Amino acid sequence: MNHPIRLIYVSFISPDFDQHSIAQIVRHARNKNRQLDITGVLIFDGLRFCQYLEGPAATLNALATTIRTDPRHLDFSIKGYSSLLGSRLFGDSPLSYAIASEPGDLEQLHTINRETDASAFVALLDLLPKLSADSSIGR
Image (cartoon, rainbow, N blue to C red):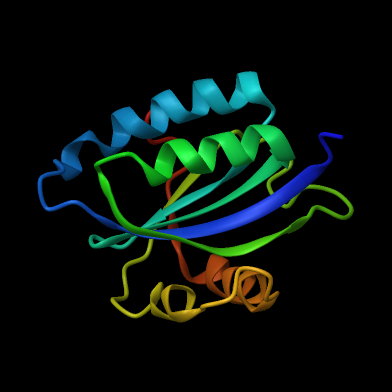
């Protein structure tokens, strides 16, 4: 069964990655996520990516594998993984984008060690109101 799930991962950006291409990545991900029925948010703090995704289990598991092997991501780690109960946090938005302007904003998520621990989802919900959102990037 391809039930809906939600997941959060954190990774460090590769030093070889050109940060100016993030808009292109967001644009591409929005188009692909729309086709795959995936919604969520990508958060970037200049050093780390944090992404919250929600959608069909098989689709998200395959996407996580793709991201894990992407050379632009280092130290990829799933911080939260669970069934999606109720409605989606990001409705029908294929990918919101936000900048974490404070250096420690993603630190709490990065230090979580158990992907079955709900604390990653709680930390994300606490973080969202603090972020500088730019949902138009990459459109």
